[in-house]
Image (cartoon, rainbow, N blue to C red; front, side, top):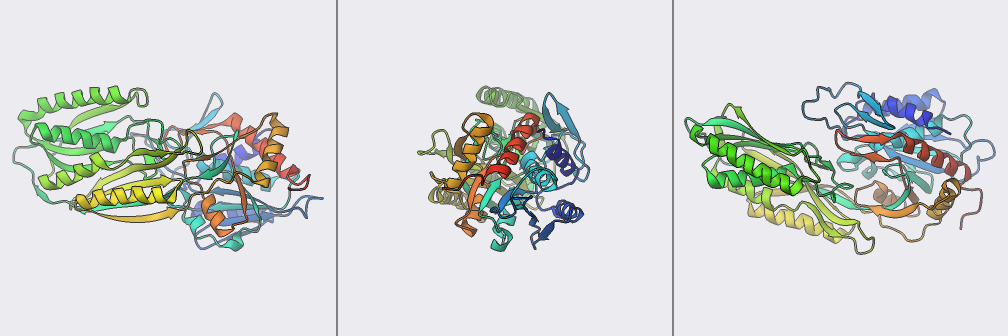
Length: 482
């Protein structure tokens, strides 16, 4: 059994722009899919879609199996990539992997959608009554799952298809929240005779702020803070504007600052940037071999941050927690708590914002990190706002549904799946809060580089997961549940 059917649907999905918050077109596609096949479908007020299909002959009375995925993707493109968001993704297949040319691929979670659609579309694959739930805005706060009504889910056994390993049954995940920091910087006129330079930190690998937070990769916003602190402590420069990162839940791979300096200081400025590059590269060469710093000529803006406002900004950039903050005591090697300083922006009016994504398997530690951020922000004269909190999915040692899925996995592949939890957030915590007796197992095709322009899908893994899904659908109820 090959994965031609799910791969065909995945390719169709990549032709639909579907960044978080822009999901009506992809949900229109889902409704049209159901209508063309005579399937029952419903879309709610936040664009969540559920499609239902009766069981095949002889399996009509078996328990409903719910297949769940989210419709949005993290759209990120490489620096200099000419792709326009509204255009279909340009797909490239190489040595058994599928990627997009210059942009993220959206395999997270387009593959989960594709598996569900392929099973709903099948005419010859045995299955129980199916219920495919497609949720919205997962990547920016799980707003679809947050607003889900319990009557949208009739099954009590769910296969979440939003994991990125085909030999692991995920059964727990971190909870999280977003913390936005804001303050008003004072401005002053740029010194007469100053020349503008654009200072860039780029070439970092970035990555998913949950799954890849423990890979030791550099945070471009932190490096920019360090660089600006070093420069302003050596020579009189004025920082006019700063920016970094593109998504709160992606490790920032680039940052830039517009700086005004005396022409006489530019040679020393360049030498200092070179020295910092050597230092940062020595720290990060294994994780970020393409790290680079650049100093480019630019037109000096008329206004720059006042010295005290720059000090407040640097207090935050140098001290906000980043990366893993604690490790699990129960699941060795699993990050328990983390923070990602994901986006930095300054406006022409002096408004500065910093956005952080806090994650933890433990609610009190999530609160502690948010409190730490708030304390630092208040020390810098800034305010914080928390939003998009989502609960952890607590790992349950015993699950009859998971045990049966593992038994069928062994039957198919001759080995047992690994069982564990992930530091990334999944919508399963909301589903368990909404329906306490719901049993959930999460798995999916192998994806590398999610939330980056290097995102790749393992096509061999697509076939493996498709085989597993069809096997589970056919045999879950062949023997009584314990």
